[in-house]
Length: 305
Picture 1 (cartoon, rainbow, N blue to C red):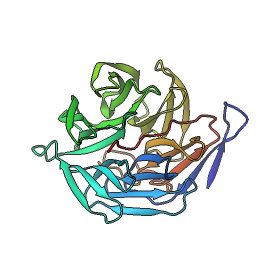
Picture 2: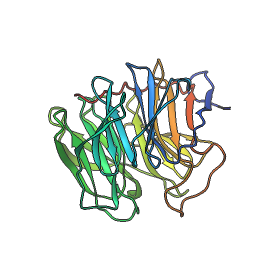
Picture 3: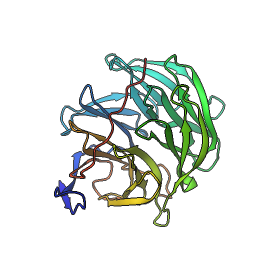
Picture 4: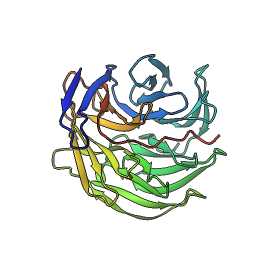
């Protein structure tokens, strides 16, 4: 099913279509692998990784046996780094075998690992979250190529949306319920962060909250406003440039992909994690593809080792 929309940039008509109707309980973490020309995304709640072509074919799934927050392909493409309920693991995509790398928060049973992404140098930056979504017990971490773990920030409730400016020297990140997107200076050589500041205020008046983000080739940041059913594009100076209304309220994350990196893939959730969040229509939990935006993304790196 596709829904035409007027598109201000260029003559193309923007189209939003259901690419894969899989009813993910909590779809998240889409990442386009340029070498394989495949889209990976996850079902956080059901503990699955999914993969398909840019037109929704050749669907594959891996079961990881526990809640998953994010994933990144390793250098070979035969394995992935996965951020699970109880720690960072490697996943062999051929055998399905998991091996623990490190559990950063063994003493916090209400926490789980959440959103993550690979920086331009191949390090994996990810955060944790309080599953009750009210205690600032979570942290932001960086996993280096040698599998050593480093803490970047703390005092977070729900980590979401790590992504980088085109040059890689600004890290963007959200604590979902803070109502802000933050920017940090990001040291390309070391992966250290400094100078945290507010990049943009998130409009939460419609019940929306900051979720997954990505940055396009023009340096603009795109964010899924979960529970409000909107995708918001911010200019590099933090101004709202464009808002796309989606056919479902619970959009969770987004990434550019396809052969020309000009399709925006959007994940959604079929069932909210807590009862206070709104219900949704039949397309809930689908993977959506938006074409005709007139915008290209930036190729994502694999993990460095």
